[in-house]
Amino acid sequence: MNHMRTRIERVENVQSGNDIIREAGDILRNGGLVAFPTETVYGLGADALNAGAAQKIYAAKGRPSDNPLIVHITELEDLKKITADIPREAFAIADKYWPGPLTMIFEKTDAVPYGTTGGLDTVAVRMPSDEIARAVIKAGGGYIAAPSANTSGRPSPTTAGHVEEDLSGKIEMIIDGGPVDIGVESTILDMTVTPPMILRPGAVTKEMLEELIGRVDEDQAAFEPGSKARPKAPGMKYRHYAPQAELSIVEGDMDQVVDAINKMALEKTAEGFKVGIIGTRETVGRYTCGDVKSIGTREDEATIAVHLYGILREFDQDRADYIYSESFATDGMGSAIMNRLLKAAGHHVIKV
Ligand code: AMP
Ligand code: MG
Image (cartoon, rainbow, N blue to C red):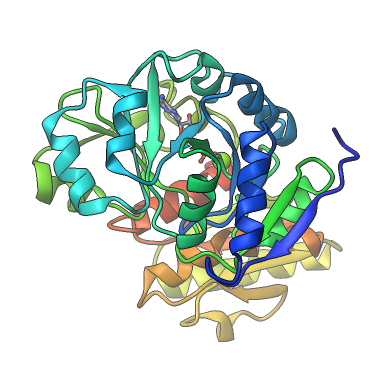
């Protein structure tokens, strides 16, 4: 399995990439693995209705077997085969946010093997909007399990190069469709409970969902730093998205945050360590030592989300020992950004 030749194929669009996408579909239908871009992060695809194929995903990623996979579809009518008991609100949500960065959980049918759902009687389903993703899913039979295409525990991949770093030699094909649009994984909404509950924050926010269907809860175990409760999405309990360096988030008044980071960076540098700093366009000019990277601008949180995982990987490549990051607001898209950043930091927050 480790010595497979991995084909890396550049696909500009579904028209010019038609032949490659057809070959990717053949690999998937034969039970193989293909990584492909989606609007959130790159996914590692396998036939979701073939337990043996899904099993290969766990092996390639080193993923714990109790961590269920999200099934990706392209048409609303394809839901019928894999889910039972679809509540009325789900159709309203699908109407507005599918295709898009939102996953919904339903009761599963017998068509979905337990090997795909980590032994659960429920199944998570998403309909992505990315055109290449949609074409690959269709070519592969219409039901494609596709977790993030990284080694378990590493930051999710936002470019084909990231996928290659982690999975080269372990999967049949990587489709390179360029950098992704959003950069953090989908919102996960559990539709099997009333009111529906967000198990993982993403680009479709609580505010957006509540405007549509009224009250929506959040899984507190996934949102409260240091919570002892067991998260309802099995994958949320694992240390995730983590860089090799020790990452600290520094929180407080912006001037004091910059001063505190400068002081810590100077100390660690004097001790001979490599220090990385995650700043923003508004602040990068104010850091006085260390390897300073701008993650985006506070004026547009989407720019921060899309660079988050790539920056964590860059610091790994630079072999940083310590990373200090500014903190971000927790409303809207900020909820997803801080959820991932806190997990990457093992919830290590310095308040100044
Ligand atoms: P990934 O696709 O790598 O972003 O991870 C999928 C996430 O969805 C993990 O956190 C899983 O635990 C979660 N998930 C998938 N299926 C279910 C399910 N049936 N119930 C609860 N969480 C799920
Ligand atoms: Mg993942």
